[in-house]
Image (tube, rainbow, N blue to C red; front, top):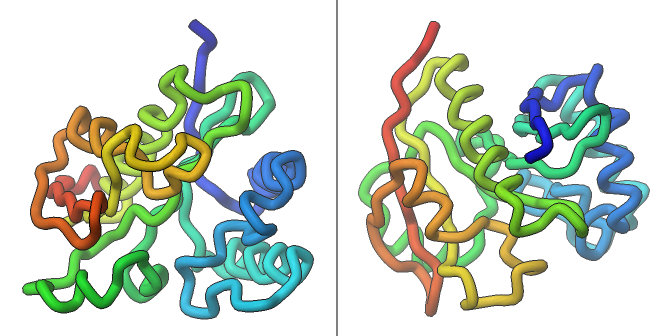
Length: 189
């Protein structure tokens, strides 16, 4: 098994993240994982999304756990406080059954082609939880779907089994296949 290291998305890791985005077409439709931020992606270009993401990284308003194999970034897990990532899929159903907002959201998971089904997504999610613990911990929510509900290349919120493997419990359904899962992460600092 290849050794993997998780690093946070910072100015220093931006070049590796940008390379992952560029080699994958900026993620689907050139979003650069801006879709869950308040500004979303709308009808902007991939270049605008790239610029917005880089600005957020420099300002410290974009969080992610990047998975590295040697010097190559092969996957990531986006997380952030709810105000950083307010735009989620199935939002109407989510808000209809909402009792309390979480402290943190897991919004997007991505694994580069050629590295899928090798545990990278699990490493990224576990890394995000460790980073959240270092940032004070709290209630963490994710919005995964069961594997097989959609093609693996479109499973951007991650697989339900991955979350459950890492201690998340099912809270409620908010779509045909989409679950709200929750877990409390204890702070490390």
